[in-house]
Structures are given as C-alpha cells and as structure tokens.
Amino acid sequence: MLLSVIDDPHLRGLLDGLHAKSDGQIAEIERFRAGQATHPSTEDEIKTFRSDKLVALDRDKAELCYQLCRATDARHIVEIGTSFGVSTLYLAASVRDNIRAGGGTGMVIGTEYEPAKANAARAHFAQAGLSDLIDLREGDLRETLKRVEGPVDFMLVDIWIAMACPALELVTPHLRPGAIVICDNTARFRADYADYFAFLGSNGFRTMTLPFDGGLELSIRC
Ligand SMILES: C[S@@+](CC[C@H](N)C(=O)[O-])C[C@H]1O[C@@H](n2cnc3c(N)ncnc32)[C@H](O)[C@@H]1O
Image (tube, rainbow, N blue to C red):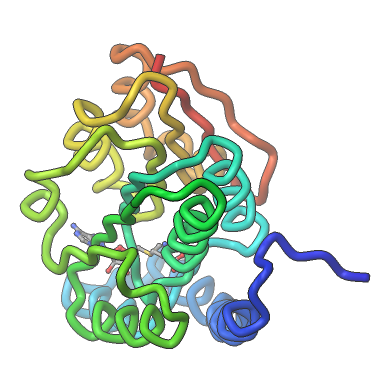
C-alpha cells in the first residue's frame, strides 16, 4: 500500500495534477536556462517565460515540510514564493491537521508578485477547501512582508535566489526560538546563496544541507 503524508484523497488528487504539470515543464525550463549562456534574454523576456511556469517544490521536499510542521505543531507559517500554490497547499494542510488534532488557530502567509499566478493559487486553495488558512500577500515581498504576525514557527524559502536573503532578513525578527527555516536548492546554487549563508551565520542559526535533489537547507533559529 502506497502511503502518503497527505491523508485527504481530494487534496492528493489536486496535488497529483499540479505536480504532473510542474514536472512536465522542467525540460523546457532547463532548455531555457541552458540557452541563457549563449543568448541571454532581457528581464522582460525572462519574466514572460516564467509567467506560466509552476516551478513547484518537489513532492518529497513538500512532504518533508508537511511532516516538520506536524511534528512541531506549527501554527504560524511564512512561505517565500507561492507561485500556483503547490507548497502552500502542503503547509496549509499541516496547519489544518494540527488544528484538528489540538484545537486553536493558525495561518500560512504566502507571497506572490505575479497576478496571474496569485489568481491561480487562490483557485487551488478554494478547490482544496483551505482558503481560510492562507493569507496570500500579492505584490513584492519586500513590501508585503513588512508586517508579519508572529511568532513564526516555520518558514519555507522557495524563490528566485536574489530574494531569499532579503526575505529571511524581514522574517527573522518574527521567528520563534527553535523555528525551522527550509530553503530549496542550496547545494546546486551554493555560490549564489552566499548572502543567505552569511546571514544565517551571523544571526544565530544552526544549519545543515539535506541530501535532496539540489540540496535542501534546514536551518534552526537558535
Ligand atoms: C519557485 S516559485 C515558488 C513555487 C512554490 N513554492 C510551489 O511549490 O509551488 C517562486 C515564485 O516566487 C515569485 N516571486 C519572485 N520574486 C518575488 C518577489 N520579489 N515577491 C513576491 N514573489 C516573488 C515568482 O513569481 C515565483 O512564482
């Protein structure tokens, strides 16, 4: 019997479809990235290319996030980079399941600056019946995260690398001691994450790179 961390057949079906769509775009994204070396695109061309790409967090990484949020009874979560809402659905499901198990309240703050992606994400949240647990902040996160209701238990960083450190800087004052911060692709793009690692090092985080595809950073606010 195939076990899934998501104990909700309707949500599992929705996630299966979204992961399949995202996985189906990977080859095209890799071709585009490879082409940049010889024919660099303009900022506008890059934006247009990215506009319909899910670039969803891999299923195993998203499932790990769900598990960590359940294990720590996470109630306040911040997600850096929402796109079409795939990882958000895992995070909101963990909050819903924590509330079902122990009562109380909780919320996932999402962040997305592409209006079309934000609209698609909202439709997926509604389909999953999870809208009430997600506060999707539409716009540039450097503006939308100026206000964060803490203490934050869990943070997922899954965004264009240049935005990872600014986001961490904004959220860190709201992280509770022992809060978990997950960040994607930190082994694959180690050099590009130099500012992110410098910030972790000088702000009391303990960090390790987990051996998922591309590396997944697990940092604890100590
Ligand atoms: C890797 S994708 C997120 C994927 C998502 N976590 C998932 O699993 O489906 C990163 C997203 O961050 C958004 N983004 C990039 N820079 C941003 C910024 N400054 N403010 C808000 N969103 C931003 C992009 O539009 C993109 O949709």
